[in-house]
Image (tube, rainbow, N blue to C red; front, side):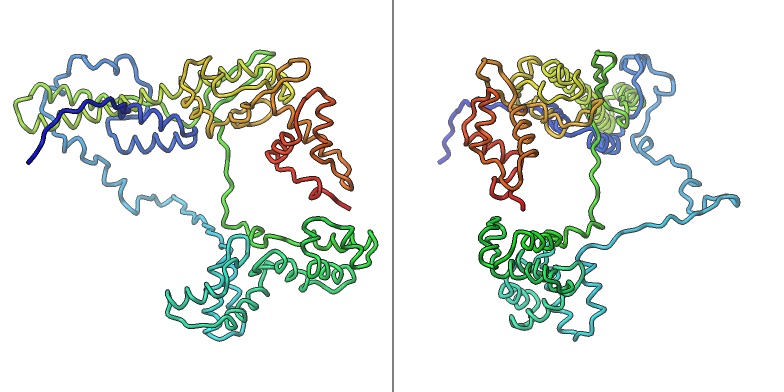
Length: 475
């Protein structure tokens, strides 16, 4: 038996317009250009160009031409002249130039191509090609040979042994770049050393990697010198040979990698002490609602009796509303971005006027900007994410200007970025024979008036990607 009951719920849902606005707010300017192009293709009621006051009026009287019944099929029909579609649309004077296209060679293709230069059997080549496919971008074979053998049995139906795979791997390890196909860092470095001309320094370097690899990675140099009876100069020369080696042989092969270009969302100029902020919309076109679609809607609205016209009205109206929503969302995005960046500038005015002195960065969190702009913290976070500003002294991500604060002994509030800069400066000038420990760094900061515990120093040091003192030691 069916039972019916009433249930009251309070649910908060985002409208399609709000969802569209959020998505547009998150993307940077470079992606916005692509998003607008997609919308122009999908919605014929949206056009490029500035909307005049006359075009913005939907209630203008219709011309006699628009009084006629217009077919949607006729409007959507491609009106491109046939001569523009011709494959031989060239005059006799036209010079046709072939533009070469370089696709590049990937790291793995580079390794496979070297197989063709070796005198090996078909089976050895097949095993080597499968092993190359398991080598990562750093140039290492991090999988065990047992796993590779199992994969070949299940996926290809090829039975093989570890001995066969090991022989195929030895062939690969003779390829360029040197060190490729190693299972770990020690083997990678040893492969490179074995391919060098034997010298006393190379011989000592091999002993260090073979017998005292852990001590080498932890920089326990005194223990290595004692065990191998080496002088400090001999140890320095041997380690110098190791440091010349490439720990990531695959990383040196960059032909298949694309450089990433930063396109700033804001441009900030300092004109005699006056900060001028503009949105970088150089490649973002202006948009307007199609006048032809507006007139078409008015034409169909006068003939509501026909069933086909009612369907056409729904279609055209939907496209027009979608175009207006998109234009409004773009305008709202621009307004929100400007409000947020102006608030950041007002909070960090001294920093921008000083030409980028990080000591003048004031503590600032998302809530500080939200309070000034009356925007939600999540909105400020979306603006700050993946956005960049071009200043007279460089291009910076908006996240750069946000930092927590702490008080000095005098009660002055300073940014943690200032403290990190002091840490970095002290590490840069320290003696590499005896690097500063976290306790010593904390003592230096306390002398400058920053009451910071050792564990806080360790946290900031890790955020700056600075190793512990033991790993910063050099001979």
